[in-house]
Image (spheres, each protein chain N blue to C red):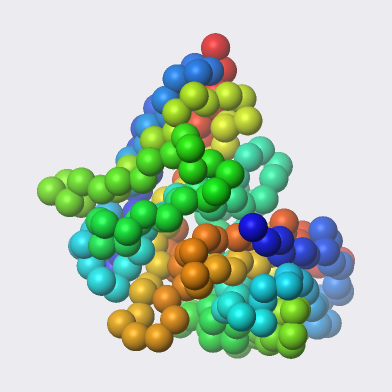
Length: 125
Length: 108
């Protein structure tokens, strides 16, 4: 059974880089059947997609965050990670890592059928 | 970019049917997905590809689509269905993911 677990610092200073890791168990990061993504939720707000990774070579980003975000994978550790540079208080949120099934044929829309529990990251000095 | 619009809130009495809509100009060309998020918990996938239900999701949850709108229907609403519901779609050409603003379902 696929399981995801976020980890990283809960507090980041303004202008610094937010770095989070998602540890994957039950599937391979390089699987053709799974995409891997990050979604965040600001306090009291809705879900916002940040970016996704597929087969460790296709990266997709929210256009509004693209200039500050990198999603990458460490296949040796079965982890994928998120980096957001130059953070501000607006980046304070619960960050979820998630995975979605990718079919072998036909349309392949990104979606998320397995989620981690989320990690709260606050940006404050 | 594109937007997905949901009503901020829907209220329904136990046993009745709740309908939550999601509208967007690009929806006729894209699949839509629905998630349920209870307070303090991670979202759970309820519906994928407009109408399909993952294993383990009760059959009182169903999805439909018509033109630029998709609808999540919850039949025989139960108190445990009180949650926030989000629609999501993905632009097939760019793989950009968009979430609707979410709908808070209140069970009276």
